[in-house]
Image (cartoon, rainbow, N blue to C red; front, side, top):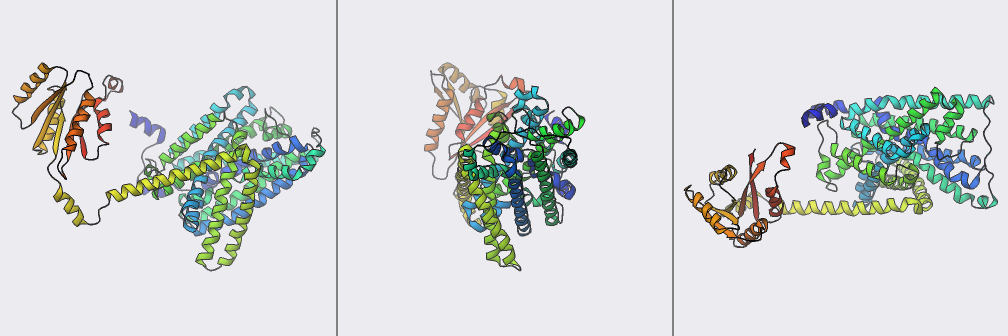
Length: 612
């Protein structure tokens, strides 16, 4: 039943040979990898005004578009830089691979940790922003904002678990519809304004104190608006997900993303400036703009709101495309659990997808679905990865000295300077608002990843055999094992376990019984003696009903008596109940004993299932 349900929800399993069919071309790569950056037009401008208007009032609109232009300029610089990363590192991994290879272990882990946290925040912020678009159109749903955001995350997780190709088709078309919708909003808004059909409301005038603090306010607004640049690195992280020639397709998607973001972000920002849109707790800036241009309650107003919700959900889809691949790369290097390397039945990294789902959902409920509270945590981690990636590429070109390396080094050197300055601005402006939380999480994640690596290295060293001669010596030195077979009564499960022990050829078998009554123990001893088997029966009496404790103590005592290279085996029968309701009627004693005995280094545990 579970298998059939999984096939209905997720789809039929795909063979390894079908992996090539699951990769993206340019048409579907744009919505998957560029939707995060494209979606930022729905909230990045509003984040700038949230800083400017409470302090500068009407003066805000004088500085609004220059700040937007500066952010777009930074976007173009990053695009040229990541174009070179795609050429140099077609295996994907982005900042993690670049920093790890060129700057060392710790910078690589910092970059990887920053990307992981950035991806989780991408999903949480995008889902919350999508929920905000819903509640802007339907204010009665405001109290359910966190649940709406969670529903968006669930939908995205389901789509991505179905596989790369299906998620691209499922979520791809709405991205293009959103772009067309925003272009129609921009064109209609510009025409309406030029014809004098809309008169913006007057805003609050700035105070002299605000003017004196102008530089600080502008830098803080710039730091808030840099959320528009999140997702730029996703293309370089996911190059292996493109069809061949993967590098060419990835670069085309990168250029298309930059073009769409520059056009739509500046166009929407220009309209916000012309229509004097101000932040509002009950409605997003895009919602107010659509109402001013098309009229509240009009069909086009609801189209803009619906498409905004969808594109914000698709922004989270960018993280679903990039983060599982990144975590798989880091897991293959031993810095994350090995389970993240395995592909699921639909050839995707399903464990990474589920981890992203769980982490983002926790953030949504922890911050009650408010994207404004999450955004200060956002950009600092992203720009840490930007900086390490650009500096790593600069070191790469100066080391390799391949043809044309000087120009490439200049490009990445410029990227290093610009992203470094931007990171300083963001951290200094947003530190107390939440950037410190992101930095602390990155540090904690780096320590965690290093401890995981140490664990894997310790296990590998413990399991390592230098040569086949060493293996032969180990085999020759192993003495016959002693077997303890716990027995409570003469039943079919016990007989199956005993038969397994005898068929394995063990010569020293101990049947161990624990009871609170001597007469019952002697009766069992007599019954087993009549079987005529080569096994020693011993029993122990305890009046305290601590059967498990007595058995574990006996195993420890016997383990201490072992000769060098001799092993101790504990064989237990285990009832297997297939009905989940009836399973709760059994006390699972064998499973609890197994968990305890597994911690004994010189003791092996065998279970013999008996199906009922």
